[in-house]
Length: 480
Ligand code: XIL
Image 1 (cartoon, helix red, strand yellow):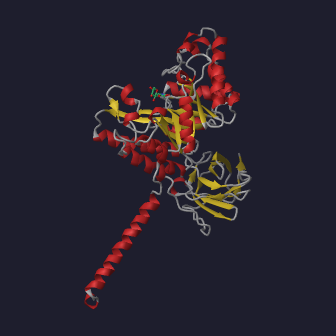
Image 2 (image 1 turned 90 degrees about the vertical axis):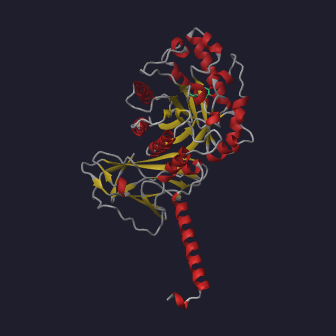
């Protein structure tokens, strides 16, 4: 048959086919990982991806370019610590921190304030105070002055940092020794009074494995705070990991703390290894960073992952842990490592769900059980001028398993779903939203909640009230 074609025609046809297939594969690749920065990938599920930044490193350099293009959150590495902000009693210096705040604001990055009360990088004069009333007054004055200076700019404050020992007892520092146990809640009360809109965290390392004595002690303290109404909003998990040692229960730990009604954040992530780095360790590090991303994405109240630095030259690891390094996403030349790619893909990957198409009829992957008893907790975890992020927690309050579910609700104020919701197949028709399970979250055990609840970003204007009613497989649910 090719005899009937001229050679030129055949060549042109083959060339056209080749171009078409190239074009199609590029489109497929693009739709599978549309995000080209960490911030974009995190934003697909409403997570902020932050970086620790130091004022004296900012300038016309790769460090700064990466910080401002890849990330949408900033934590000052040192500039908000007591040593810098109140080096002598009553003399405040916010200059270096102001530099970071302006940098963050000019790139629309959220700011984590770090940190108000900490035994380390503390001004020397504080250690000389010997009476409880004098120290309490110095601590409260420090907190009030610093929080007031940055009022309106700070998303979350690390109010108290590293107050526990590994065995779960309180660290013996000047605050503990002179004021006693109550200094932590006093610090939270004072910070809240100074900026009621800032969210407040307790931040520490080695909380990531819930079996550790330290994690349990901090859990007990923050549970008690929640019970007694001490104003705490969040627990920060520093996550200074050693390659290959991300605790297997990290996701479960994040969920355990989140279940207290707290936000959970990964605040100082790095993953160190002996240097020079072996390729096996660099590969393991790529796995570790992806694991951390997945652990956070699986917990709806995990809304931030902050990396403790941009690349090897600015990392605190080589100077602190002898013979260790290569803990970050960029190498000694600020080139992205394989950890960068796997972290990016993990952040984006779980959100590649079907695009909402209003005409679709939901097709459950298994037969719905009718007459379900259910409760729904609709949580707006983040809201900005035009958009918001919601997780829809669904609990089966009945005594039989629900296999396959369809949840229906109405947006009350004209809200509209954005692209790429997660953990469900979504359609919106007028104000009515229908969410159907995916294969991996079809089953709701009796008395159990979805461990991968559906969530979405949506637009709002004017008012953003939550829906007042939900039905699951046609039956009304209790709204909690
Ligand atoms: C580190 C900084 O990165 C270093 O530049 C500084 O020399 C020491 O502190 N836990 C914390 C951070 O909460 O503030 C620490 O940051 C790292 C450990």
